[in-house]
Image 1 (cartoon, helix red, strand yellow):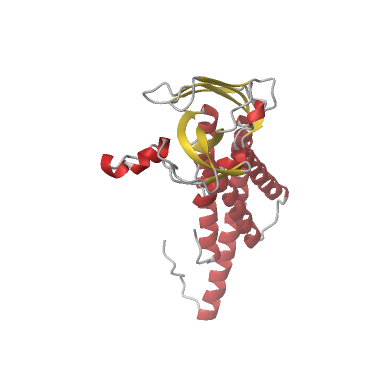
Image 2: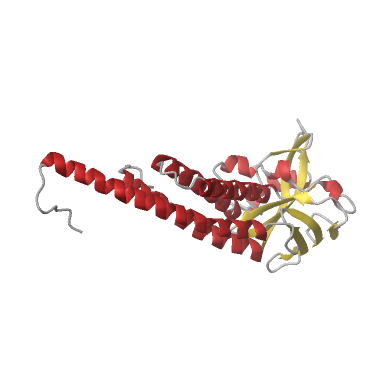
Length: 300
């Protein structure tokens, strides 16, 4: 598109003409963005509906690959786990049935509850923009788009299982494991079941813990015997990624003796992820277009 003005204008008139043209373009864009914002409400509303307790419960199968170590089902209803029925067969424990009955108190999935809160705030941002019809404050519109984008991106990150603080995430299970008393019978004190997300799949991690006695000395028995003769037997591959780490659990420190992680795809969460990806793209494009017209150097 040519920027040449004909007939030619004097420099001071040309500048005024350019400013007037830019003002018209900005006014047109703000009107278009207002229409785009109204199209975001249905996507956010549908996403919240998919995560609402009004939806039927999602019964998700759980199974370890190529082994019978862990098999069963887990039921998600809204942001909560309402039922767990798992058979556990690991070398360090006798065969165990882990049951959380629907009649028990449900367990709230903290990351999913956070996603719901973020989407509710995002919807409020959109609705506030819809109510301010006639407002042409470009800076205010851009700030609203930036806040909306941040909430959508944070919600997607939580469903993906992406975290900004890996060290904190590594210890998150010690604070947010499913309470032992919700199970029938209650879980062993050295068992932990925690929930997280991985690419919109629900991930359950079971840990069998070994308490660490402060000041305990090594003895030529059990694990100490194995460590004593390890140099003669050759290096052994660690059984999981937390084998050497210490964690705070209850009143003391523990090591993770065995760790099992299984994932189950949740159709509702996958649908929410797809909707959020489309919403994120729409808001990013709107924010970038406004930044360009406003002459901002930050168009990200």
